[in-house]
Length: 142
Image (cartoon, rainbow, N blue to C red):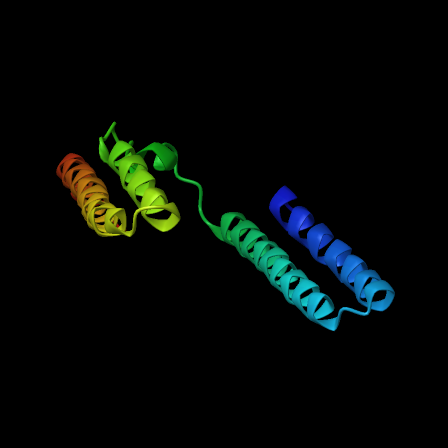
């Protein structure tokens, strides 16, 4: 089991115990319900992590090994400005949520622009890599 799965499974178990103890001692059944809901979500994430890990191990065990396939399959994504634009948009969104509601609109617009720009930038780099790989090895299958 991966660290991700163990962490969320442990968190889910802890929240179940803590929620039941809290609900019984404080007689606050809303808190008990909320704690059990979060515990269920944590257990769901942990179970998903376990299933993904098992599926990945099964795929790797049955996949044929090709020399140099890891370097050929995934390109290196170069430096880009879009994470900085995301940070600026998040500042606008937080300022808009906390104090000045008018900052939400520019923050949201910059967020959407950053999302589209980053996706297009990565998409362009992937297509460039695919074109270079296909030109180098025309018989390569995907």
